[in-house]
Length: 208
Image: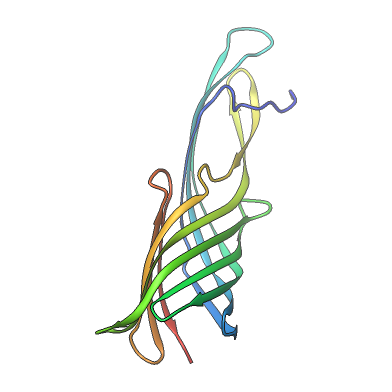
């Protein structure tokens, strides 16, 4: 029944998240330089949280508490986004922004994420068809509060809230795409900050 206290100065948290989101995307070029799109799909997130902390009760010696949580959450995802492009004979530059929300029963408000990215690349003809290759940067803005309730010795039931957000929101991106026919485009993109984040995207698009 004590008021909530910050544990950031008395405990280090080891947290990792792995998310897989298969999704469908519908997009349209509403202007020669502006593409708008909708996304819908489902997501699975595996979260691992570990920490060791010490609590000083009013009476007695400090109590060491170890918190270990491995949790999988699933839910539906919806998103919207926009891309703007400029280019020349052999080069292009693009900016993209999108918002997505993953609805899961385990969290009261789901998981929200804003992704902003910029890319600079080359385009031209290859033996497989028109192709593009690029490099760029992505910025992820996302956060949530993980709520846990544990019954510990001596101090009894304790509620723990963990605020999660990216430690390093910037990610380098490298990708390529090829138009294999009048209707089909294939795309692969990978990204990393060479520390605690890795992102991989594979896409097969049908144009009509």
